[in-house]
Length: 201
Image (cartoon, rainbow, N blue to C red):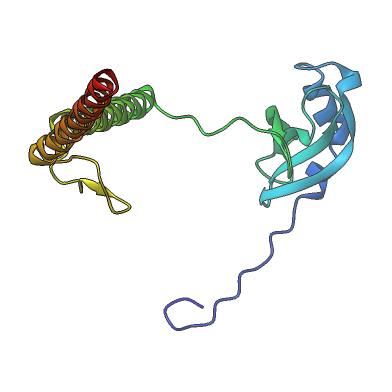
């Protein structure tokens, strides 16, 4: 349909003389490749009524799915068949090279990749430096701690007795020693008195 009107496109009928010129097409292909690399007929493509491309199987190693092509044409029904072009073309499923990318675009992609890599490395370096800084601060805090926040008693036992308790214990020890000395002196005095009584008798 075109401009709201139904338009029927007539199918182009190929020139039978072109379709019958397989031998001429094969001879033209043999001028660019060995005869053994050209296989059996593999169809055709109609471009115009008097312009046709004939295909042949490719037997050359390393090009699976490719086909040999010979484009033939003639001016009118009275003109001879002419070979316009011969070439090796990729068919369906053929292995082909990737699309060509201009050097300027490839260089731009390379520079973008390098810049991203440099940014990632800088980010990693900053993260590592921040982690080391946090560890240093933690060590400083540990060294500066006076343990004043910790309880001096563990399980109800006073681990830091006051000085006064030590003095009291010392006084008690001294009094005990004095009492022992007094008892010893009293015993000596009693022994002396007994000895004098015996002598007087």
